[in-house]
Amino acid sequence: MFRKAASADSREKLGIYIHIPFCRSRCAYCDFYSQAGRDERMDPYLKALVAHIRETAPLAEGTPVDTIYFGGGTPSWFGAKRLKVLLGELKKRFKVEKSAEITLEANPDSVNPKDLHLLRRVGFNRISLGMQSACPEELADIGRPHTVDQTRQAVRDARSAGFQNLSLDLIYGLPGQTMERWRQNLEQAIALEPEHLSCYGLKVEEGTPLACRVAAGETMPDDDLQADMYLWTVERLAEAGYAQYEISNFAREGFRSVHNLRYWLMRPYIGFGPGAHSDFGSRRYSFVRDLDRYIDGFEKGVPILDEDELIPERERCSEYLMLRLRTVEGIEEWEYRSAYFMDFSPLEARLEEFAAQGWAEKTPEGRWHLTPRGFLVSNSLICDLQEHQEQGALAELLPRALARFGNR
Image (tube, rainbow, N blue to C red):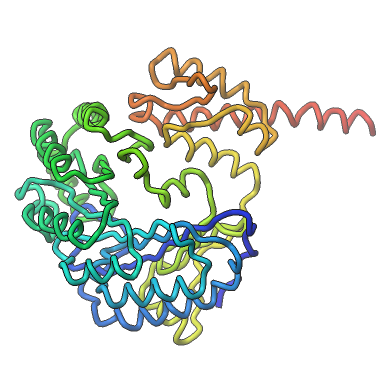
């Protein structure tokens, strides 16, 4: 059906991502692969996922799994009984650690006390609720299917069910949003006392209803206002006991998202479902963003692999900069040298220039990381470092090439 990846190093723990592409409705800003009004395909999709899990599990035999993440779409819309089946299958086929972090993304309107108790009982121990806003007008404007009261009730129900690790998602920079409105949203989220908060700046993605509205003339908060919102958020959450550990993520002590850190720290993971990606066994591969074709892959043998490539070390080296500099842990010279055998000095020289601008800083332990102001322009800074990285690599290769030529 698709070319299988090589087995992962059994010494490296593994993460698993399950994509649930079903939604009650599509939000105006969303460009993730999801579909509304396709509930009749839920049971065939469940069967396809189970078949895919059984087919893939032998490749990771003996490898400990320490994170499982059900994302979407809206996994809670898929139903607790189906989620129970999937988690049971994963635990049966993979070596899931007893202490594994097992996360469910959910919308406040699609959870209830009975389902939450069932999910907690079968092993889900972390829940991420898509709050997005505490303003009824904003929720309606972006097409969110829940109310402010439903968010508060979902938090109460999750606590009652035994979830002690709860995250809330929020978006700033929504259409017409003012600084005062954003402050009110964040304060109401803090008042709900989650262990974790994800605060994302809105990006208008091509092909979404929101993009059409903007093209038709709807105004959005400008870059300066979004920057002010972000910097205030970092400061306010620090005051409230939420330490920033990634550009958009904040957590109380001991509650960082272990699964999401896996992506930023370049640790292996396997994805299941349409559009899901994997980085496993030195290969990166993904599956087609097509629900029906994914199901047909296991019912009729239709190919479902979209991309599959062996990742060269040079590309890993570039990704090290791109991903690690999203985190407050940042990068470190000997970590870089030992992993990639590359000269760090061109990067450090540039980082020192960034530090003079207030965009980066070096810890007493010798780690370089971006500051909140640096995070605001992180894409540009990381691209700049990657260019210096490539120049340093060429500078190393040229003497070797000349030496070989001279010996001929």
